[in-house]
Length: 239
Figure 1 (tube, one colour):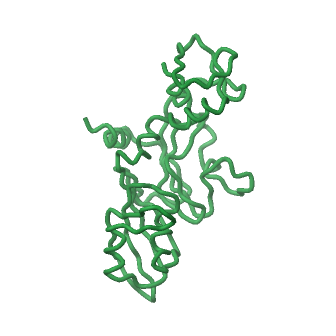
Figure 2: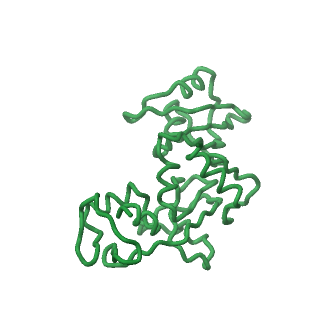
Figure 3: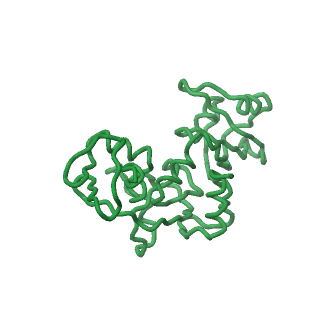
């Protein structure tokens, strides 16, 4: 098995991130540090360590979390007071990571897994997995601005483009929008809205590919059903 695949299957990183770990010299095989991406190992025979800790292939697990506002997705922020992993059932022993992120002030559907290969596919631009958000902004957006969001805008040197944008309602100087995007660029929705001068007051992800948040309450956490997982895998392996 390719070393990067083994690392991904151990649950600590996606395959792409696993390659970065190898290049940076953080992986050793049978006691020797390797930076060669072509390295292959024999499962059950070779010893693989990450920063001197053994890596073992874990059972793949898949969970849906309704992330509440105020929680951080990364495990590397030593100043964070609330981490999403605090919401995970203590009986889940696998090391999970989120597929994509929601910033501290956002809420909604978040996928947690230890399946690095699936994570890599779901976040790769090739597959164009749609994510849908309900967004409340200060101001009343006009048709020209809606058209621009669908056509694409350049912000911070990046092209930001919505698959679709619909006005759900307007009231008291606020607009509620439903926005679908596929790229998953950092703070993409907030940047789109601020480009036209509309501060975001609330942002909630309501779907990720075939998965729907529905009435699932903030802070709750559950394993994906067999049907949900099958649809999710089908979205990146259509044939």
